[in-house]
Amino acid sequence: MKKQHEKIANREAWIGVGLVIFNFIWWFAFAYGLGKKEPDQYTYILGFPAWFFYSCILGFIVMAVLVTVIVKKYFVAIPFDEEMEEE
Image 1 (tube, one colour):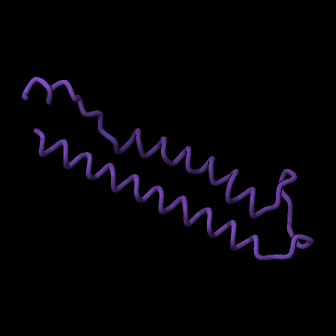
Image 2: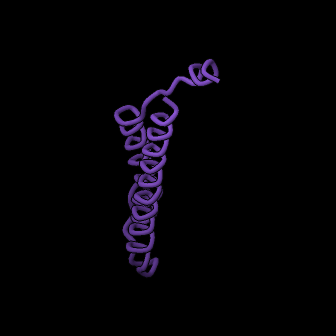
């Protein structure tokens, strides 16, 4: 049973690492991709420069939804009470 818990925890940790890498790529691509222009050439969304809106505001919303969906779909609740009883 402990081996199964370790396998689940390892898989979930790698999913978390994947989410962090995706978040960094999203942020970096929009922040530095759209932010290379001169400030007078920026386009604005809701009063924010487009690079900031996409990288920080929309990125936060996308990550919040993505993390919620992935946790509900792929993560497993592991009861720790069973481990304490076995020891």
